Structure formats: C-alpha cells, structure tokens
Length: 401
Image 1: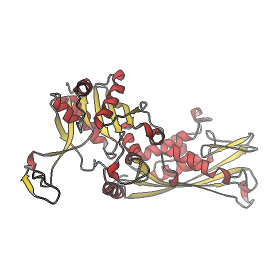
Image 2: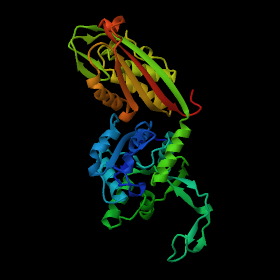
Image 3: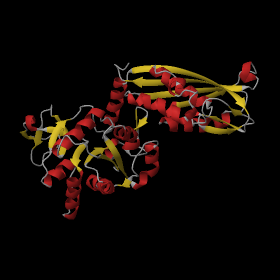
C-alpha cells in the first residue's frame, strides 16, 4: 500500500468476552473499573481521540447493553454489534458492520488492553498503510521452555527455544480492510474458528504480516494480578496530583426553576447570568481549569460572546474534562457545595451527583454534592441568589506542565 496516501481508518474494539480468568466479579472484566474509570471506557477513549481514526465499531455481548451505554456515554461511536461465540466470530461481526462504510484500513483491538497510547495507534496506522498488514510486537526477555510430551507445570523440560526469534504480540493489529474481511469470510466458510488473533488468520490466508514496535505498558488485563498491576501502573504514571477550586455566584430573576449541576429544580425564581446560569457546573468547570492552571470559564467562554447566551453548561464541564484527558490525566474527585436558603438541595442531591458524574465520565462515587445555608446572612441569606464552591482533584502524568 502506498504510504503517502491518507486513507480512511476504522477500529474494531472487541468487547464481547466474559473474562472468566479475571476472577469472580459482578460484571465482565471490560466493565470493571481501573483507576476509577471503566476499562472499556478507557479503551474507547484512546481510539475516539486518535487523530486518524474516523470510525470506531464496538463489538459487545448481547447481555451487556446497559453496561456498554455507561461505558460509551458521550463518545461518537458506531452502534455496537453483537459478538460471537469466539473472538474470531466477534471480529468478523465488527468487520461486517464496517463493510458499508468501506474503510481502507482497520485496526482490531482488545477491550482488555486499555493503555494503548496515541503513539502506538499512530504506528499501527502507518505500518498498515505501508505494508497492508502489521502487528505490534515486543522482544521476549524471559527464557522460554517447551514442555515435554504429556508434561505438566512442574514436570520436565522438552527443549529450550531460541528467544531471539520469538516476539510477544499485542493489539491493535492493523490491516487493509478488504483482504482481512475476505480472509474472515473464507475461514468461516471452511469451518476454521480457532484463530486466536487476526495475524494468525491473515497468515493462514497467505497475507504477509509485518511487525512494528509494541509497548510494554500496553498490557492485556486477564487475571486478578493484572488488575492489581494496572492499578499500580496508574498510580505511578499519574503521580502528579493537583487540586483546583472554583467559586461561582448567580442572582435570582424571574422564572419557575433553577438549573444546578445539570438538574432542573422547581423554584419560585430562576438564576440569571452567563449561559444557563448553572452555578454548580460553572464552579466545577473553574475548579478543573484551576487544577490545570488553564485559565477560567470566562477566558474560554466569554460571557460577552452571544453564542453562549442560554447555552447548556454541561458543554463547559465536558470541555474542562477533555482538557484533562488531552494531557494524559484523569479526574480523581469532584466536590461541590451549594449555598442558598432555597430551593432545598438535599432532595436532589443524588440526581445532581448522577448528572455531574455522567457529564464528567466518572463513577458516582467520585462526585460529592453538599448543601448549606448562610444562616440568613449576606446575599444568599436574603434570598437574592445562590453561591457554589467546588474542588477538583486531578491526576496528571509526571512531567506535565
């Protein structure tokens, strides 16, 4: 394939497995959290955010639709398709769903590898564009022994293999789309359903497969020990902990409800001011931007700009969250305090937490909402408006500025 041409690139994310080796859990491993964020969500985010990828096709199990919706919230993805009884069948389902879109290149990636970097994805695309089929690989550093016939772990060595000729293979594996789809169709027609990765199927079909540099951090999470290792890696990699604060105030005006934290709360008045005057989301946005040392809401969304008049404030919070993600970080916790005499916030506390968590892509356990009065002192005590105080704790990779 000519490397100088820009080609339409798609990705198939295989997330239909049951993850039985990951230990007992209420949900399949791809929906379990790592560092406070669902594994599949991390994987999807890596590919949705990749500059060259225009289509992302998830493949899921039919029983996981509700879990998938939570993992994919806010992402621009193709509608998920159901997987098959084997990984090979699931990949083919994803390829068939992509066929009407006619991509030139397709990347096949396991949902259980949530740490694929932007650089790795870029290398995969470039390698496929240059060769037509390429896989990420790492040199084998351990000495590898072949077990003797009928041997068991703890038995006898059959032979020692030459590790200089061995490689550990990862995903994303990248291919010219049409040849790979044809290979899958031919394998199914011939009753072959035993290929454990797409490179093996491509080799069977006579496609020459190149290799490019993989990444040691691109681990596949399979066992409980892998979960523990991934948590440790996240803690070490995102060791730059930063805390930001945000304060916002809005006055009351005519109306019959207020919007706080993205939730409509009935009241005898409305809040006035910037956008929809969501005092809670404005404070949270400023807290995140403060932790990033990245200005404030007014700098990014000037109130003098008419395009923000009446705008929904979830756009501002999403923007701030995306700024964290773009720098390789994540939000660890959001804490919001509302100060007013009325309306009563307590009955809506969980709805606010759920709404904020959804906007920010967080588990609800990482969002706190509290409310208090000012004992009838000051403008809030006189019922003239509402104040909000927010704190955001974020984690960034060491070396970020």
